[in-house]
Image (cartoon, rainbow, N blue to C red):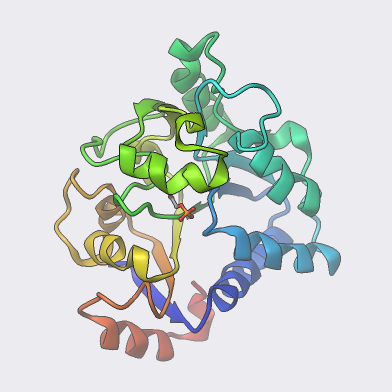
Length: 260
Ligand code: PGA
């Protein structure tokens, strides 16, 4: 079962996850971090800046992003390459040569998934993967119906996801229809999954992922197959969980040496 930690705010959640990542990087400077985009991980990245400012050295950390839009021009501010540069690589001082994002260029898109899988495998995989969850239940851009064995590949976004992400663009028709995303099988290979979610709008997807049936119709439920998962929520995102009282009890009684 996943460990579920319910925080009072997104900032508190970000602080908790960032403190863990910073400790891992201090212990192992060549740590490999799986980064997610969207609004959810921003409090983690914000808190990591404080650790970088306090002297934690991220220059040997490798990062792999979960996904990328297909067909956005180079340097487009909403391309996930640009978002990762802006939120992670530059402020934390990562070496850009160690930051990997799937290649969403139309030219060569047929092999983009395979090339990304090779990069992940030859590097030796991801130590800690940060995940958000979409209102459709997607993790990465694995929309409902994605195979639990899927690897990095081109996917078609649901209209729901395009509408959810339209806030980052000038209009809905500018939101790409396709993406390249790590598959559920790819994500499950990471050694530790940390799924964050905030706000009432995520409550149903969180309950489905954490407590619902394991089904391709709820891609987030794939986390139930992993041996080391930490789900970090605010009160609103936790509001539909049936076993909430137990999660709080278990967290309060967790031996400190276990960490998250
Ligand atoms: P969000 O997106 O963090 O912007 O809510 C999450 C996701 O789509 O995975």
